[in-house]
Length: 210
Image 1 (cartoon, rainbow, N blue to C red):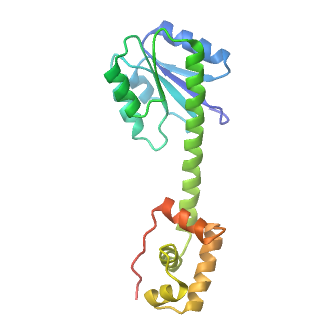
Image 2 (cartoon, rainbow, N blue to C red):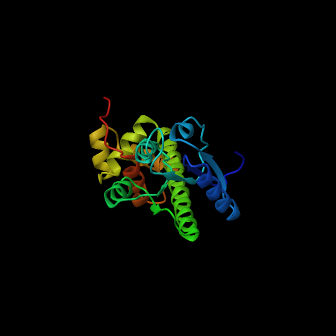
């Protein structure tokens, strides 16, 4: 699919429901792809784009909850909006605990669905942005030399240059040089910035080689 326009996926085995939902969403300006079953959706090569899923709770193959659990394992899981003709409180609680954005019982108001879709897409876009930022951060960290990674791990733990040098068996001047390169390569504006990066990367001190 061209561009980065969000995609709204509909998974419902009722043809008339899919058609009415697609018409409503298309009129609101959303791009829509619909499926009659969970397995049909799972066989689709989905592009990495912001979006959400409008998912029927009762499907002929996998249930909506089962599909939701499968989607939750993905790194860029789609936010899910459940729709059902016979919702009950335990099922609603289960779906919401598993991360569903909304749980709508048919018949629902069109504006309620459109509002849920807007919120879900914003959540999806934010999650993709966070994932892209983290991936870029990992790539910068991967470009550090082993010694630079050792220095970074000890610096963000709060050790002074002299302490880092003593632990790694190098001079304080050498530590300062490595530390400067770490800051430049990681694009860290301050030590606090570097500490936050290390936290996101789950950086821990590594044993230095003699």
